[in-house]
Image 1 (cartoon, rainbow over the protein chains, first blue to last red):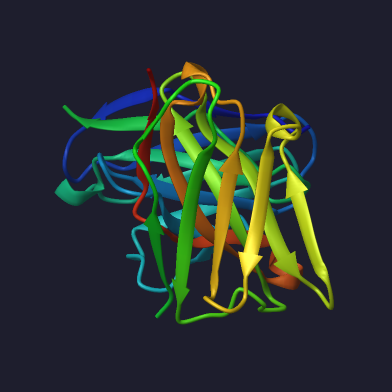
Image 2: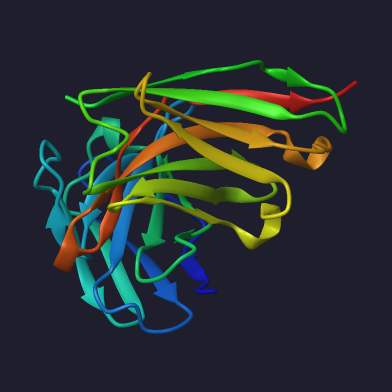
Length: 107
Length: 125
């Protein structure tokens, strides 16, 4: 099975900051990488699919990049509603697997 | 707009069967371009995929190895819903359980684009 590792596990930042979250796969997954945002008590929400495609309705300050084993999620200018936990997920092979999450907190 | 509505008990006794249902609106459980999944989340295991059911000229199921001997996911075409049964539960099965649609997007890969509201299931006597 493919393992997904995110870094950092937590991150403190301020409104307006640019932040980057990294996700690494245990083997090459081409561009079959998705990103989700989860707020407390809510289901995860799809932000980015296929490594860099923005899901409909998601603000353009979110972007994704990478291929192979290394991927990044970037938020260009943090807004108050962006403080949440972010997960990557590989869809290259079954079973689909999630990273352990990155909790983005207000500094 | 696709909506997934979960139902089922929030408390299950050890050794008994956990049963949840996910009702679909805005899509069909028999869709040839979607799979219908169960995913759970706990502090110790994070987001853990449990399994899926999908229709591609016939019905298929995939299950996580960790629960393969205990899990059944069934579609119900008459009610446009699917269900999860997890047998012989222990306290380690305590988690928030989600149903989710997985869109099969061909060259772009698959992704979970719609989720149920989540059900906290506690395994305790």
